[in-house]
Length: 330
Image 1 (cartoon, rainbow, N blue to C red):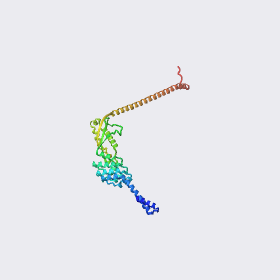
Image 2 (image 1 turned 30 degrees about the horizontal axis):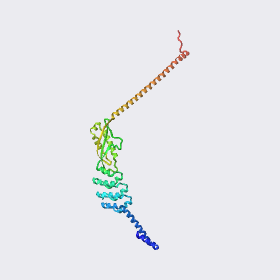
Image 3 (image 1 turned 60 degrees about the horizontal axis):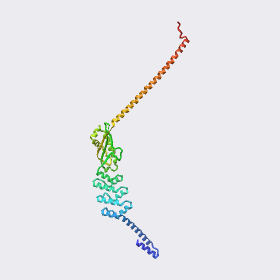
Image 4 (image 1 turned 90 degrees about the vertical axis):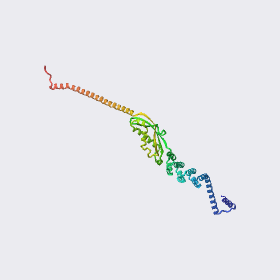
């Protein structure tokens, strides 16, 4: 930059036109100086990250960090994740290029790296592609790995999702039972992509508990041994095609509700009585209608009798006129 400026000043001082070669040299010098200035400024912004990566053995060059900035990738996150991967012995599984592509796809690189580190510590088979796919599917892969190691307890029914506080079932003797269950699950990472969620597990367990109560002969059997319900539900394999594996089902509380069978029988008896009353009323109405018909027929017959009696004098008069009927002599 200084040589080019001095050349320009000397040319202006001599008041002589510059040759084409001089102009080309000055232009190239200015362009090269600007490029060096831009790289110097950009290197100054990534120098701290490069030095930290170099000290940690992550081996990410300054040019690579500058290229990340040009791609609109946060180099600080990549450096931190790369350092964690190297120090955890996952340098070969978690590459810088894989982290960059995952971040460009909208993934959460720190969550995926932490999940892979936790999976390695727990000796769970989890590769980068699977973890990245789970993260892009919207699942929290780090939480999934933690749940695989440390089980999770789900309330059934869940007070946050359901307005009903209990699961209501009716035994064969008509007694209603109200139950609450606690389901212990752990994440099934192989089914995490495409598998059913926690809501499906709650719905299946609730359905299984209600069905198990309904299959009992009396409510006393359930009260005497609530584990009958848990065993019946576990035997159905309700965790099939779900993202969780059911470890155990525990009946936390069970109470006796209404005598639904007796109430239904009373309602049926009331309905039968109403039907009988309706039939009786129908028969009474038919009898009244028949009686009215008979009265009308009687009146009709009486009118015919009166008309016939009125014809008798006429017939006698006609007989007298024709001489058929004569007055008897004394």
